[in-house]
Image (cartoon, rainbow, N blue to C red):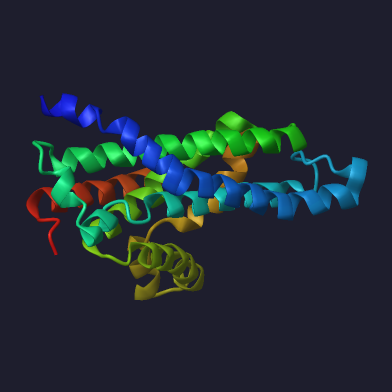
Amino acid sequence: MIRASLARYSPWQFRDFVMDRGIAIAIIGMLWGYLLVEPMRRTMGPAFGGGPPSPTWPIVITVASSVVTLSVLIAVNGIVSTDRKMGYYRFLFSKPVSAVAYYAQLFIVYMLGVLITMLLLSGVLHMVVPSFRIFYFLLYAAIIYIAMGGIGFFVSVVTRFDWLTLASVWVGSRVLRNAYGSTPGWKSKAVEILPPVHKIDDLALTLITNGTALTKDVAWLVGYGALFFALGLLILRRGSLAD
């Protein structure tokens, strides 16, 4: 009964994603890609191959991976905290629907929405850069959604300021790992508990280019995000959405 009721929410959840996040992601992604890739294409003309042998290929990968990161940040922003701040949870859960199941489904629906949006954007990029591999790009997007989105989900459960907190954690982890990751002493050990953002650049380059990636890197990223997603669900189960 509850599962049937929950399933009826999914079309509305997807509609909300499209209207509140999907359109914004598509517009921002299109503008970001156009402003960074199109000037190179016009300047280089026929020399702009855009493929792996081209010196512009790392830039294409950087642009694509940046769009994914920004898209996930937009997608999970307020995924739980908005309902709590605005009081929507009172209406949502006035019926016999589990908050844990509802938000777990919402997380998955938003992931589907992000992947569909990335499919559209990568299709456009593929027309400009024919060697750009759409399937591997979508696989990369799924990994980042779980890794970054899982942390974002947890943050949205425990704080109202999830967008700022997630961005600070993501960027701060990269800065701290770069600063102390290879230094001797306790600091290099301490940064190991931070999100493995230092793996993302290599993952994007190898996965999107060749369809290959180190299994341990993928497992680390996905496992880290999945752990925090599970912790978020656990807090939802044992706590209350009311402030």
